[in-house]
Image 1 (cartoon, rainbow, N blue to C red):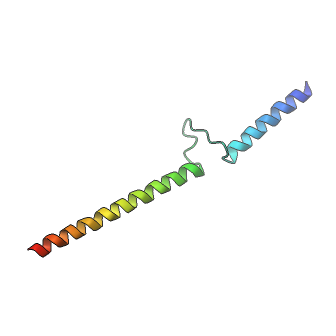
Image 2: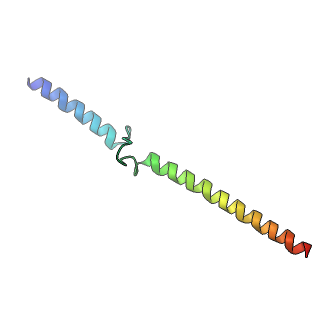
Image 3: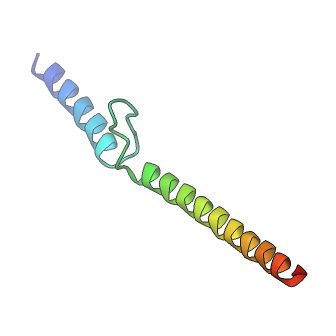
Length: 71
């Protein structure tokens, strides 16, 4: 009986260490919100959005210059 308890505790220890070290990410109840994987994903999306807004601002400036030159 003692060996069974040790095996169960060892398995729980292994599973909990995988979760703690983010080898296993649990995607329920917002548990994955502050993991490295999710934060890297958010940073990549933010970079893409920033590039899109910078490009659209440059296009607006170019269009404004074209209209000013036509007058």
